[in-house]
Length: 396
Image (tube, rainbow, N blue to C red; front, side, top):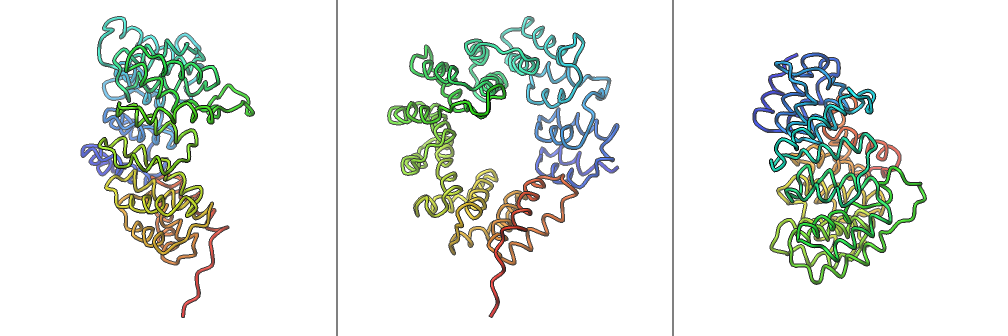
């Protein structure tokens, strides 16, 4: 197998083209040394999404040693790469066994912390992630303390503590987070507690009964008044994300923050209008719809993906159809991002638009089986297009 296009994409730092190219490679060609070589390269590049694709979807064996006999699990633990480590440990044997990869990773991270407790490496995040995989659940104060050693939002220590809390979401954790927001002893504690409220959802609790009572209404009631007094930009954007995550539907208030000086606050404020259009279409209001349509010109692919997804879902759920919406979707058919094109073409295909259907089928034929960036979304859309699409309008 010629891996030069894939390795060239890695050398350029282009993860998206790598994923597109990878989708054209049959699984059989990724077995053995070829897959191991690519896994090592994307891991060292910090591409967790690509590593998940190789291991979780393409069957690359993460237990095989890398060049010079490097053990992937030990390497990821020493680097403090908890998310990548989770990928490498997926499906790996008896977790609780003394010599299991999970236990080895835990010992490696704990030894690194003991040797250099102040190093700016997310070893505590590794400990938290592996403990959770082993069924060890720490108190929220312990998890917060780990996150605040370096107090770096977005770091492995911070994110793994939040993830561990989210997977145990219940009323007690919700009450704890509210109390911490109200009586935090530092800015960092308050930020973490707000972030916890953003992540706490009863539906994410893998240990709870399916009929566990929710607390999203209480979360909105607690969080909404804080918008009027919050002056910390990080806390403000987390507040907006948290309100949206708990189903807050006050689009008019959210739109006020789309002009905030902090770009991250502006992006957080976009979540509620996007969700409103996805759920209610034009019923969300003309100003809300106009805001969402304008974001189709955003230079960031993730913003355009969100717009295309909202319009696709609005067509499926709410029957949204205006000339302005069709014009935006048609413009997105030539987008540089595959997933934007998939969503836009799928939405137009649901309208019975011939060009949308043709573009969608062309993209879908380009995927090899279920692989490739956007492939599973295309499969979902194809089902809806086949069952719900309007007949094309007659010509003449």
